[in-house]
Length: 518
Image (tube, rainbow, N blue to C red):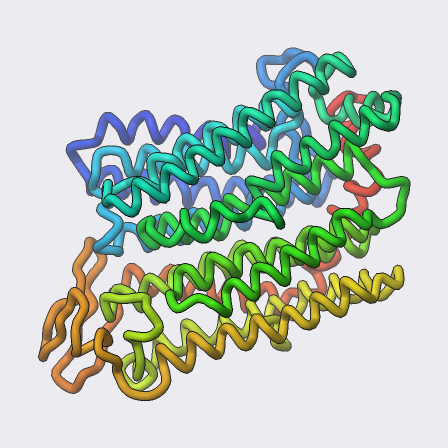
């Protein structure tokens, strides 16, 4: 049963190779991708059940013993991330097939998307720093192709910013791996948990800071977030959604994994991380409020919400880490959903500019509902999944009397709610603007005018001005909304699982035993 751990990585890679062979048959590519990702979702659930029953599970690839060989490790933290990421990757793929602007029938889309899925899973399962680096590179190499797919001038320009920043971060990463190996003689994280502590304190702090910078760039924390708001909005909506929902969270995952396992703070909170968390929240939400385009607004929100996850790490308590994990589960689902809804708005109206939208509530009430549910969740309004995650973080902060960061987190929640009302007022309230449905955009509206078409359906303005939504774009969006509601309903058992995950992070003895056998 331990071999189950390898399958979420191996299956998408094998399917990517087969998908290349099927490049002249787009329908077969679509069927293959959906089938494999459904199988991966089922496998990740099986891994979660196994970890819940037995504790951390490790496998040594090629039968080389740790710390020499390649270790793949699934503890509760990794298993939860695997399940949520598999769900999101599958939902976005279905949305992509139904989206007219994704052009998923291009030669590389499906193979590259499957490689991205394998890279994400490998990042969560990597048991050593070098293979974490390899997993990041697999994931990022696929993302370079996806973010520039289509080849528009703005897309290539902003995509190059993303590529250059990612390559610089990767250079720092491989440098950090080399320095850690030179200092300790190992890159296996379970082995490093003991050996890093034997290094002189300045060396230990320097290595910890270097890794924090590397993963901070990938997670887009303050002040390393500058590349994100310009890079994401120009890509096709499904690509932006998967980047927003998952890729930055992989960076946060790596911060939590390395900081807790290799650089613990002797049980006390980290002032540096709490300050970074507060600044990330505030700068992100203020940037969001200043925007006039839905994708750019939501991109700044990615930055803001990362601050909450770093807050839990900075608190460095079981309750704080559990809050971060629960918040990550919520954010991966809700942030992806918000971008998918943004894509539905663009598909229906031809624009994401708030100044050109209006009146969507009357033309497509379903779209208004699809926006409102994740928007309230993003703001943390009770009883949404966002409220559950933020409540866990606030309680953790109050528990150890870190009232400053708690106050910042609550204030940022109010500002987030304000920014959501900005979208609501501009897009759904009032009358259609100049570029709104029926007045411009690609659908240049008129009676029965087709606004977009894809494999899954079309968005049209009907005779009465009503807008119908493409089923294959709408259904996966609804599925993710239902998943976010499920997170809220199952808040208590999910929090218990997050506490189990945080307990292993705070006391990694079971993780080390699973990898090293001691």
